[in-house]
Image 1 (cartoon, rainbow, N blue to C red):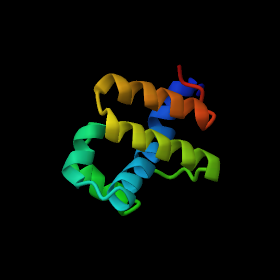
Image 2: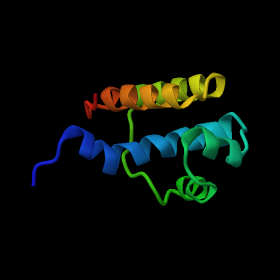
Image 3: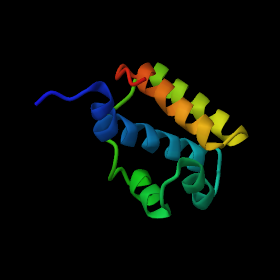
Image 4: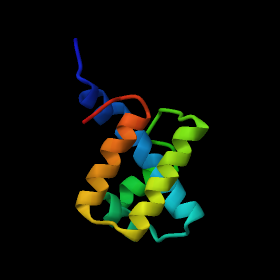
Amino acid sequence: MFRTPCETALWKTLPSIRKELVKYLVTEKRMERKKVAKILGITESAISQYLKDKRGSIKFTKKQLEEIKKVGDDLVKDNSKDKFAKCMCNLCTCVGVGCK
């Protein structure tokens, strides 16, 4: 079955990006899980699953992880829904999925 790049992103890439964002924001930026959940539009239970490696299976390169962390920094400053949507599309492109 053929899948578009955005379908692949939906099932594989986005959970992995969210996992890295959660790990970065909770462990390195020391943000509360509740606030991270609100920024990413997910539940606190999902935060817990990302931190326990139960979601997100793609391993990113060092450069890709740096881009994800930059997005995390941007989202701390401006966590509007428009900013988040734009950042996620940019990250998909960065990791080679090509969603636009």
